[in-house]
Length: 186
Image (tube, rainbow, N blue to C red; front, side, top):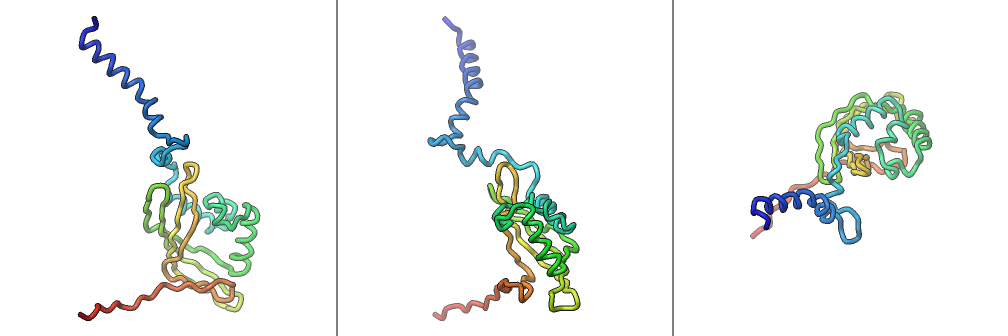
């Protein structure tokens, strides 16, 4: 006959040794794919604010091939790294004489597999029709997705001082102006 302390020790050992097997079964769905909980366990080594800083640093130095490493293919208009670099060089550098003068990350918010980073930038550009350069401070919110344990810039939205230069085939984007709401009369 087995004593109670020995039986208790055997049960504890069985639970400890079998828990990885049980946990592995719990974290997989019926289809065999990992559950959402297990997908979010691996947190990327580089935080989203650093990804945005590296991206902006690459833009500041006109290193568009390096900038490509931090963005999704969709963000790069489905271009390969060489085509993206050529497109950026022709559009920003040669046409607009664009330069990023300085930048600062203002805030970061992580929500599961998505992150939102707001950056303020000082940019300078000269339109083909202008003689003098335009200096502008803008704020952009970058939306990043966690893909293969890496944060990747997937989208951006200008949120402050957002006017596209006229004549570039882009619609002008202006901050939304809301009129005050009147209270209903009773």
